[in-house]
Structure formats: C-alpha cells, structure tokens
Image (tube, rainbow, N blue to C red; front, side, top):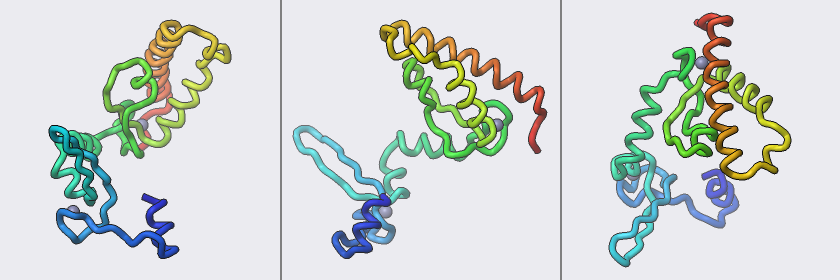
Length: 148
Ligand SMILES: [Zn+2]
Ligand SMILES: [Zn+2]
C-alpha cells in the first residue's frame, strides 16, 4: 500500500480506484481462480470484506476482539507466530502492554541453540513456550492488576 502511494506521488503509478465501487482507493489486490481463469481484482477494503467470507470474519473478530489476557483494547492483532509455528490457527489479540510482555517472555525462553534442533524438537519447544507464556501472562496480569 505504502509503495503504491510512494510511486503515485512520483507520478509513475496513478492512484487505483476500487473496481467495484469506483469510489475508494483500491488497497486490496485479490487474485481469484475460477476454473482455469485467474482474475485479479483491485478492491477497496470495504468491497474486499464484502466479497470474502474470510476477510469479513477476520475484521469481525478484530472488531469484537479483546486482549486475550487483560481484556483491554487490542493493538494490531492477528495470528501470533507461535500459533502459526505450532499449526494451531487461532486468532490471538493482545493489548500493547501485554503483547510487549508476551514478546519479551517468549524471546527470553527461546534458546540460542533452537536453530540447531530438528523440526519436531523445535515444535515441541515452541508448544512448551506457548503454554508457559500463557501461564506467565496470567501471573503477570494478576500481579499487575487491571490497567483501567
Ligand atoms: Zn470498493
Ligand atoms: Zn492486555
């Protein structure tokens, strides 16, 4: 997105409008394959959400999301990397203070020799860290108390 705007300001690429509503700037470039025909569409985020059940689900989840640990306002949000690494696909949202603490804890737990481990060993380690991080966060919140 940033790149297009940058190029646009240099006059190389014109701002692209959503091909569905012709109103908003197209920020989502969607490739759909139907049969052997692949089609690329440039949509604004509104039309993209309307056209894709997954996108809608994600933005709905983001809309209602609360911080997993303290119930605060989530920042950014999305699938956390441990969940991706361990194959457990779930959306996890954290507020800024919690995600910083979570991240700090995980970094601390990651062993330097992790890269030398075999993949199953890495997975086992990540699963363990994920569980420990959960426990640590609950502990951390109960010591810290609710923010607001
Ligand atoms: Zn649109
Ligand atoms: Zn939180």
